[in-house]
Length: 517
Image 1 (tube, helix red, strand yellow):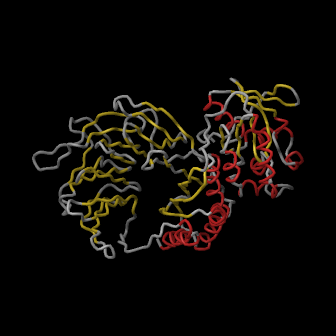
Image 2: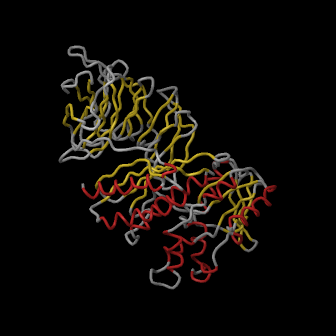
Image 3: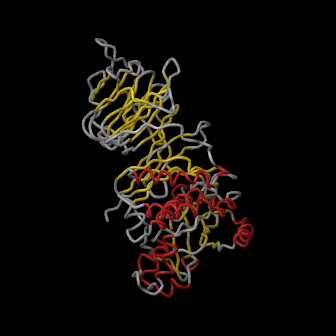
């Protein structure tokens, strides 16, 4: 616990090291739980204006009185199944709590009774239909419709939709929620609904899903957007409805390995998320961290923060919040940026547009292919563990580019994402794809295609633009001292590669986050 708290202090310090973007927050008071850990927190204000913290614990649900902010006190505690994850939302004076382990189902608590004696656990609805025994998350919209995510919701863990407007725990007249709909196409980890639209994190496909729920009996996906590390956790919409925020996770194994130093982990996890903002032509401003860590030393934590702080300072990003817990190492980062010109997306490519890439391609994969002590490995490894987010390039091309993506899963796969999103095709000349001379020197010919087209983790930008902007791109290249290379054109359909003037049969497909290893 001490080391986790220490990490929180380290991360909080960045608020002050980047004061120009800080939120000017200060700690007023705290409440300490013994022999358990927290998993969620929500707020509640009663009819007299009194504020409470509703806290999900690993062993139950707690309500904390905040009347004296410097000295908060617990009003009551309701025991429940042991679980790492609980989630809480409120409708009127009722709290609704889900638990991701065990068989508690839905806990409903009457907050008018601050003795904690008026509550019910239920796995069935008002009409005795089975709801769920465990679920990962809950959201209640402005109409009193509750969305239950994950767990044993439906057949796949999508979103069970409940009407909670008539809930009543009055003795002798108990009214439970009623099932009114189900989204059962994909597992949804978390989400938020506003109006007739549900925004949800589809963690196992690595996409943010936008779902039309105007007909609760027939929810329809109307849009998706992938996230960089393909572990899309959640979604939240800005007050003006123009932006939706999501978080992504970096895991030991898929995203960094045991030979990474703590400093390299801190740097790369933030760099990959900044790269996603760069590919949208936006300016990164704020970061929120959710970190799961095993038992580690203060030395490890200092090194982790050192790597993180390099990028925080360079791009003037402030950490504005976060959470820590104990477990296998994983880092979840939510990065918030602002629009500069237009937001670049993947679906705007037009027939005849040129296709460009920045920098050189294939270096990260080359590092993974080479033996650690072999000649050249040290050169390529710096590209793998210390990628450079192309923020300035994204800002420059946002004035005219028709589409953009950062190369995280391999050029072949990421360019195909642009083509599919735009309902177009492409022709690419493999000879034109820029590589370092050392790649040709140290990588055998039979592995070069894998490096150049299938490797991923380059975090260069691949973008499309009308031919008339060729001079603009040359000017940007000179201004940023960054190579920008035309590698092909957008076509009406089909995916064609050529090599040495002949059509090439490309086998590299890029990285699949969910394929069996």
